[in-house]
Image 1 (cartoon, rainbow, N blue to C red):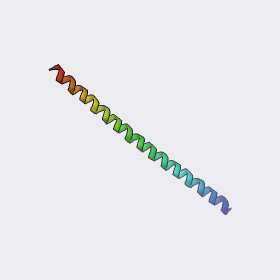
Image 2: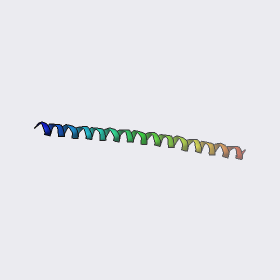
Image 3: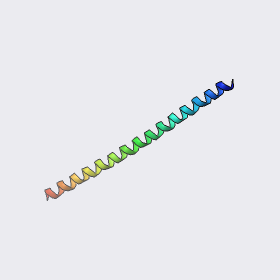
Image 4: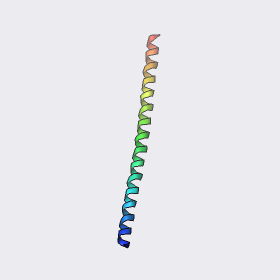
Length: 56
């Protein structure tokens, strides 16, 4: 019975680590999407600024 308990404990640890890694990956993807959005907004603002200068 003790061996089965150790195996179950090891499975739980592996599952926990996998979920932890999954959470970290999701966090990094979220940060990357935010950064991409910021760059996109900055580029759009720059285009608008250039358009305004040429429209004058």
